[in-house]
Image 1 (cartoon, rainbow, N blue to C red):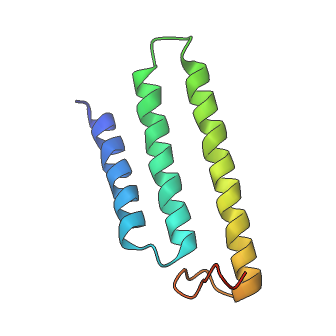
Image 2 (cartoon, one colour):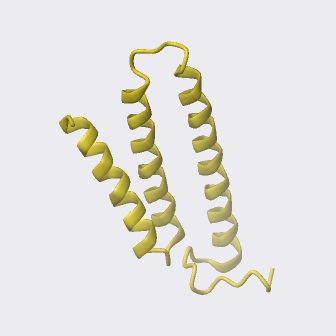
Length: 96
């Protein structure tokens, strides 16, 4: 296992651990999910490096990651407008 793939695995586990531990703030959770997604993209790039046909799988993955990021930022803006905070502890869906 090369150093690059080991670094990507550490990035993935670090991002997922940060989401699991610090779920109280939405912005930190979104950044951690983006870090995990970036490391998954790097792993896919290393895996599909030799084959040209599988590049479109990574393109579809990037489209999904961008959509996830846009939806997350939209939720963040809506929470900031309605609750003036990105804290998930004070957010109650039944009030909306």
